[in-house]
Image 1 (tube, rainbow, N blue to C red):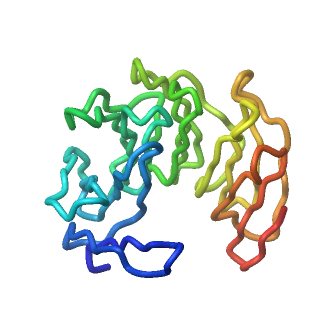
Image 2: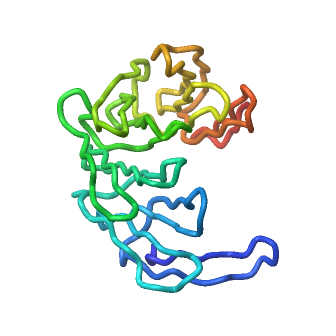
Image 3: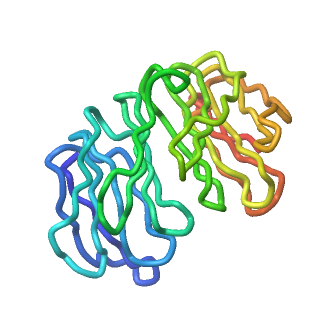
Length: 219
């Protein structure tokens, strides 16, 4: 938790450079879908943005009041979406560093956000929270447009299908749920022996790999 990010060349397995940032630890990081920008969410309540090709002073997106626990670029590369322990979702313009929308309050999560995923058309954000809820937010308006009800404990992970209009969510309640986003309904529920903490879609298939508290990975 030294506030540094190391950039590695995977072909040569050598360190390309170190990006200096927050004095606090980072919770996550993401690459830009089209260029060499990196964003990372920190315990210092900020989102840090670097160009990995230049060891320049990073940009800082400030606005959250607690740890930034999740975030990503929109697939079109124009916006940043971030979630925090402060129970808010923020939508940022990458070029201007201005916050377009703050999503919070009635109809949204009542506890800290734990994970989020963005649809491939860059139109919707799905977010999960410690309060067991999953919400759908319209990126353009910043309005909550749906809620997926089914989990009974903290939602720890999620992922959008690269082929279908589905989202998978994993929870400490020991379930992995596949949702149909078009109808905002459950397609299937996969029971686990322990809480589900991470997941990944397998390419463009209908298969999902899930990781659990007990160290097991299921497909």
